[in-house]
Image (cartoon, rainbow, N blue to C red; front, side):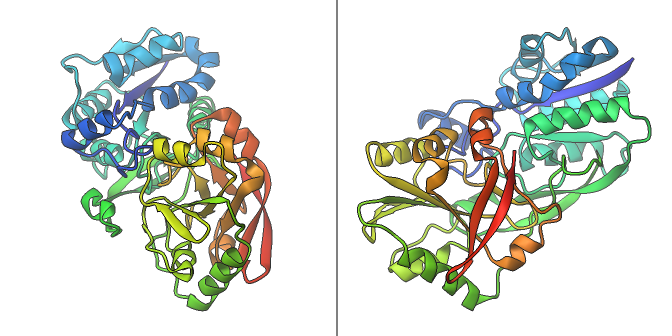
Length: 372
């Protein structure tokens, strides 16, 4: 019988919708809670566990007490073996302790739900030379690392595939993380911490985020010109993060939150660096559109670094009112030739699937497929 380890970071992703850009550190977690944030990682872990329900009689699930795994496992119908000695509330050190003990218990595969901080904890515990394959369930705000599946559901599907198919290859994939304090100040400072072994299978695993700065200023200027020219009166525009969108705000003569979300209406800045709650207030009863870009190297348009634009915001605005902008180089560098969404809501993900237009220049567009 195969053993599957499960570790959930209970606070991963809580800072996303409230605009805190991460939850590293107890002070930020408390601030997120005070702003109305709620835990989401357990729900995403449950989505990942769902494909494993069909093979639950063939595997033994090893996990942590309470919110770090047991509650979610039992909710999905598993009777897990528990790691001892972990108190509530849990810490990063508990994640590392659990990963080490699972390695000692000989688990065949480790599933962990969180963001880049959680991936760092797993790496700290296992190290570069560990043979234990791991799959990240994307549940955090920062997900730059290449150890995460493209969605929680795909994490579960890949786990089943790995457990059932002998000889499925693994590869060493990058664990990246950024300085959250710098991130909140609008500066992106990322570094490579190490590598984890992850199963490989087509489009189920995401790629390392490309953090290079776009040098084609004329292309970005043309994209901005196209977007601004088509802006309508009395429409609230939700402006997503990213250097590709920055020139749009510059052309409007407005201050831009590079790594946050702003709202513009009639060429005026309504609000800067807003969270999900504020967004919902601003678009209530209003005509609204969303402008987002594509994460280079990965292809995400929602669910990575822009969680403030939540499933509920997207539902209210509607797919037809989403404007995607990107350079052709960024689009053509996407290995699998499709865009990705991971909003945390399966219904909204399905709504976004299909084909979407991408503004790539002045009166230039590409039609690209969106997968979820």
